[in-house]
Length: 213
Image (cartoon, rainbow, N blue to C red; front, side, top):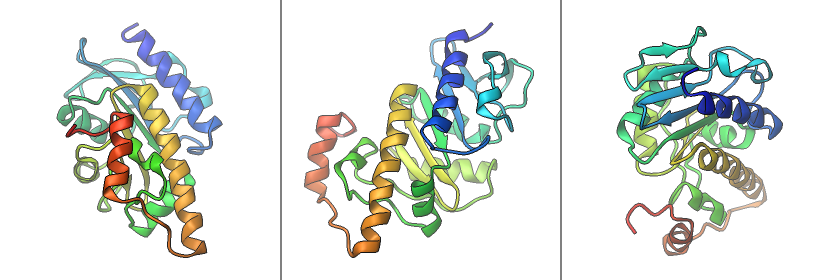
């Protein structure tokens, strides 16, 4: 079976999405790129994560050609491919529909650094323009909003975390959801205290998420 380890990890982190309340049902998707093989393991479309087996995970090349698997690939295949094609530092992508990050995205807001954990993405988590799910337009908007950061919001949709490893991508998705929850709560209390560029830059240096260091 091609990319056996990566397919097992897609199953594992898919179940973690549910366990950590980062999505519901079959929402969101996960992929892992094996750059040496030039192949991607991507979660299948419209399957509950608890039902997915490694055999259900779709394997494709960087042009989207299916090389192993009988399931239909995630509808967000365009987004995964475009990010991998344009970000040589990204080998794992986690797309969630987590409540608070999605709430911020539904407001069309960028997630400002209300907490230092936002530095896991970069200076802030930028919100993309809106496009229908699964479209090439959404993929382009996601790539633009991501820039050189490790996460972005998808307007009226959800969150993308992209990182050098799938472990880092999942951790980023989880911690950005925590920061988004704080942002929503502080917005109800008044005007949040936002960390300065210098303060967040210091944390980015410590996290290793500063691309300019």
